[in-house]
Image (cartoon, rainbow, N blue to C red; front, side, top):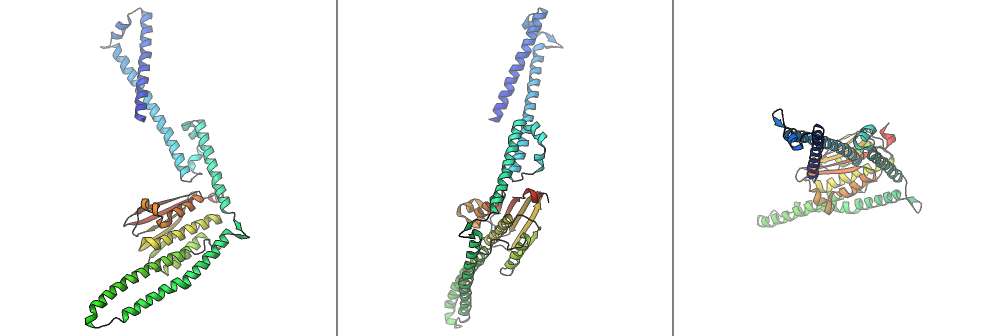
Length: 358
């Protein structure tokens, strides 16, 4: 469609240029009292005048078309770059400080509309932050306090009952293996029994992994007075004592508002829980960095990976919750996963204006 419009514009311009040239030649013929057709066919430097008129019209039309096309590309490039920054949540990007360049490229009215959209998105981000910091109360208690208390209760019950029962089941399996009859005549029966015991042990191990992930998921959702870096490090160190996965981290000490820090901490908890339950990874890397006016949280594992399209439909990895939490802070969450190679999850959250300029 765009190519057709460009060809149509060129043809219209070519016809218009030829008409203008024909009018000029006609006026010249009238002034000099020459025949119009003879003047068109008159030789000028061994070629008819008509040939020069055609070449001139082609050059003029081509030049104007190239200029128009270049202008459209400049406008589109300026618009795309600004929209990309807005979509990424980088409302304070340096490109928005060049207002004169925007007006020159886009025009005064489109540039003003784009700036109004940016200011509106900044206001919305601040509103989101303000409402996130406002506690919601039910019967004199905040929602967070109610949820924290319930999580503690569930974690205690799971640890004291289900977790202990799973541990007892593992002890019983070990005892059954030790009392297997040494009689050679029952060797085939023992082999079948051991195979069934291996299956049961595998199920119990998977249940224990699910239990660890669930207990991690039921931890307190806030940092309880610690910084974001301290809370994540404590979480990772506790995890290292319970599982054999190798965990490495590089964390910047970033100061955010309380709601944003709690949300990022909760995202880390969910990602770790999902890694325990689904990834079957040998190593995990955790990064927390500040890049200009953005906070970047990235977690990479070398597990089994998955197809993000299929996962979005069945809810594995809790990606929907993570994306919702990132969006609630005005940020984005990007997931890259390859089956058999592992998964990378990157969360980008914009810094509030006062923090960004510290």
